[in-house]
Image (cartoon, rainbow over all chains, first blue to last red; front, side, top):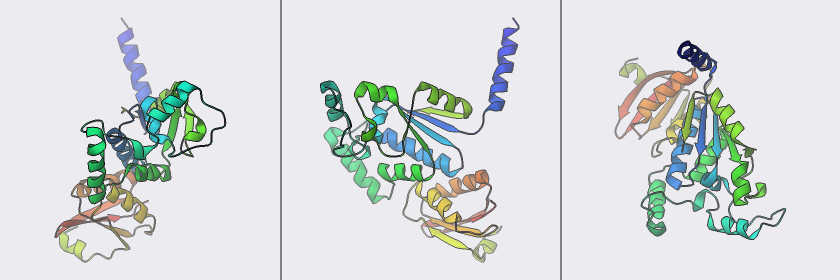
Length: 176
Length: 84
């Protein structure tokens, strides 16, 4: 049973190779979870830690543009339905808890503004300014029919390999 | 540094982040530090008590030096010396 030792040895070699880096897999499209993710991302970036946010499933909606977008190709009926039912961008997200038909979300936003907590659009802008990498999962885009032109400018596109290789190089990974 | 030393310190720049909540003071400190010369001192005013814990950690991490904190009426002054 030399395997135990060799696995431990291999693990410590991997640990040594790891550099600083925060990678987040943002699966959720809830307002409160997105706020937490972007606050942590901004804090880490301010501490000179490279940050990559990988948006998948409902998380992709956080990075959608608001309003009508001129599409390069027409969507199928199902894709249009998905696009219509899901929130378009950070201002349209709702709380994961105590939303109460939108009233809870409204109250939270009011309270945040009163107490000068950065809004989600402001946090996204700050993250971008600090050089946080924003990667959108192309598989999600494909299933839900979200087109590149519907997403905020400056985002990158990638798949599971992008996420795993980035996460593997860094020392912190979070699933939101 | 003692509180008296800190009170008489000559600062190169003051960032007033009072009224903003986490991560506001941190991001404003980072932005403000860009305008401070090497070895210069940045003073950050914050009404968020978390800042007194966060800024020393940030300074330490990115290569600055936190000189200390003074508590004023309803806010804190944090002094950071630019090291990088």
